Each structure stands twice: as structure tokens, then as C-alpha cells.
Amino acid sequence: MSQQLIIYTDGAARGNPGPGGYGILLQWGNTVKELSQGFRKTTNNRMELLAVIVALQQLKKEGLDVVIYTDSSYVVNSVEKGWLFDWQKKNFKGKKNIDLWKQFLPFYNKHRIKFKWVKGHANNPGNNRCDELATEAADSGDWLVDEGYENGN
Image (cartoon, rainbow, N blue to C red):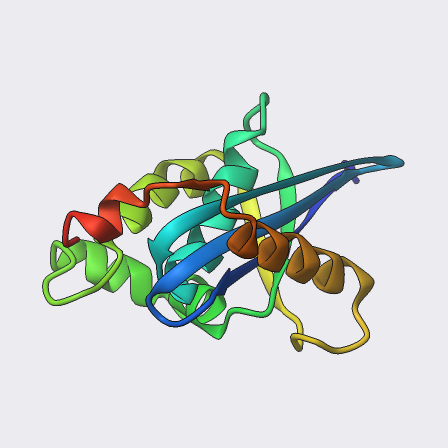
């Protein structure tokens, strides 16, 4: 069996919308990498999904076995229950975060990805660390512009 890449992600928004951020923890064997970024105005769901996208952007090889742990029912259910693929067939009519879902799909198709939902703010060290990273980024004042949100996606 090939080695799995383990990814933990979390998103946060102070107000919804409001300042937000994401936190990511990537683990390949004993190697761990953390990433985070804040945004001046966004939503929690956008940050949850953007965390997954940014994590997948880090991958240099294709065809990896990837397990993504997240406390976002929105992300997990959209993919694992197949809603995303129905939305895609209908050109995302009436859906939110279209720009991000369209960014996500090519990465999804390059790897064998399985999403696992974890309870937020519980006893999962990876999720708790991502929550810390996401909230620190949201509170940092060192924000980027979530153009997809601010331009009315």
C-alpha cells in the first residue's frame, strides 16, 4: 500500500462575513508542514474550502492517496455525497462559492482523495492546531483580499 498524505484543514470567519482565515497541516510520514492566511472579508465556508484548495496546491506529484480531515460538513458532504458533481452538471446554478469549487475540481481529479469529518473544537490535535492557525490568521490584520467574495461571486 502506498503512503497516504494526511491533511487537516480549518477555516474561520469573525462574523460571517467578516475577517477570516484558514489553517492547514500537511503530514507525509514524519514531515509536517503548516500554512495559514487571513482575509479581510470572507465567510467561514469559503475559508473551509479555500484551506482544502491551498493544501492540494502544495502537492507536486499526481495520483497521491490523500485523506483530508475537516470539521466542515459543507465541504465533506458536498464531495462525499456527490452534490458537487450534480452542481457541476447544472453549471453551479444558484450555488455559492462557484469560483472556489471550480478551483477545487482539477485537484480532486488528480488524486485519490477521501474526506473525513471530525468534530470541531474537540480532542483532535490536527483539527485543533488548524483552528488555532485559522483564527490567528483571521485576527492578524495581515489580510489578503478574497476577490471571489468581495467581487460578488
